[in-house]
Length: 510
Image (tube, rainbow, N blue to C red):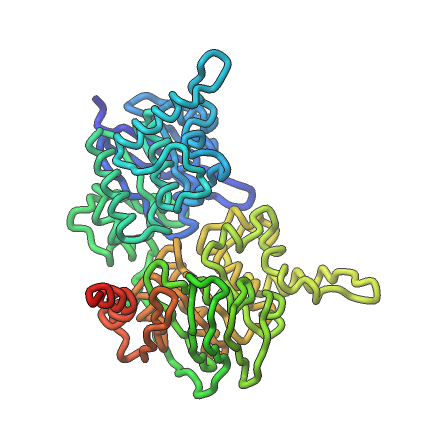
């Protein structure tokens, strides 16, 4: 048997105006978990799309088990034992998960689909991978982690020897991630090969055997994960030494209240209750908590996306009413959502359209409101340049940008309307260390200019490293407010589980 199950050698791929891959190689052994790392825009996704038949390389060869293959589409890839689990899952929500798995391959009894056999096949497949999902449950009723498990089962159902996992843990809890790792170890034991794309270095060093790093569309090298250090990985990825994970701060928040939230209570009794806090000018206020803390629900209510049952909102000391995002924007409050692909970017529109869309009304001239395309393009281009949005051109489709550049593009959209308060929900999720640093620099610059920022983050180092104060929530309640000097992993986690501990104590008393 050949030493390598997969050999991609001298792969090149160009698009109009940009060379995405330049002489890239990747070799993956049987029964191994191989990490593929690099900054956003390094070419990882392009390389995997070449492997999965979504793109046809301009040059280079692909060999599977020593045999050269030409993959013209995804069907070719699947037939050759290659499956890919994309970062953005897109199941058919109103169909049972078993139909999602066997779509296009339904077992039949004569001309009719044999649903009973499909259910049995799915149950057996799930059991073999220790996946606890009912085959008949609708896809829309499953959590992200369960959908991901189903996607892995689907890949295995094709008898895939190579399974590509693109950022599989970006939306998972620690417990869900450990379950995923158990499945990956089982796939490895079955002599399957997994290509694991992630920006989480600790996960890479936990689950992977080897690591290949790319930078600017070029191959940097392949190393064993044994003995690998975080500093080496980061420096190889970004091509420079990051002396610190967070930029140095040269300012302090002003002693001026910009926003006051009083006794905010959700219309949903299971969500946040009686939350109160203040936000100062030039402050980065972090909000920490575990899954289910209702942090996103709270900030979405402040932005007018969710109704509240009671509570009050004050801006610069004056009471304001926010019942819709339009109200929020009119009061200088904007929200960068957690799911940028789902409810942030307009993938089929250009980078320019995405940047100016929230300010589109201002470009009308004259009595019939003719669009001032010259000013529109100038301002969009200026913000694109200011935030270093890397794109072949301002007319390029937004969906073709890397995750980090999409995030900077969305920041540019909101900065164009000149807000006073920016709410950033998981602003660096799924983004590499280099792009994270750029966003941190932008956040510091905005705060120094007097903008105020509310940042939700599930990454403890980010929460502690970027926040002037940390507000902690648990089960819909605010459990504490920590100044920067007193905030630590221990103090945050103690508050993040405070209400749960209280509930346990009440249960013991009963």
